[in-house]
Image (cartoon, rainbow, N blue to C red; front, side):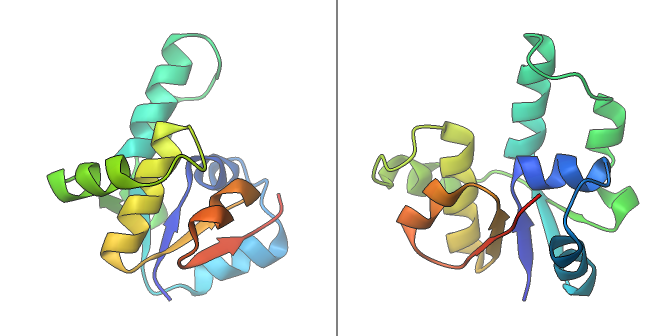
Length: 124
C-alpha cells in the first residue's frame, strides 16, 4: 500500500511522536509521499508564528526515504470540486491527491473520513 502522509503525520514522524502502529505502517510501505501542499502549509504556519520547526528539516523529504508529490492542475481541479466536509484547503488538496494518485492518506483527522476513499486513521 502506497501512502500519502498528511502534514501532522509528517511532522510527528520528524519529531518521533508517532504511535508504534503508525511508525510500522510507514516503514513497511513500499512508497511514502509527502505533498508539496504540506510543505507549503508548514511554511505559512511558521511565517505567521503558529508553528516553530526547522524548515530545512521539513523540506528534506528524500532524507527520510519519502518521495515528493507535486501539486498538479488536475489535483487543484479535483480539490476544488470536493464537497465542503472539511474547510482546510491543505487537507482538501491531500484528499484530492490521494484519490487521483491511488494513495492511502494517513491522517489523525477523523473529519477526513467524510470524503471516503482510501484513508488510514492513526493515533499520535
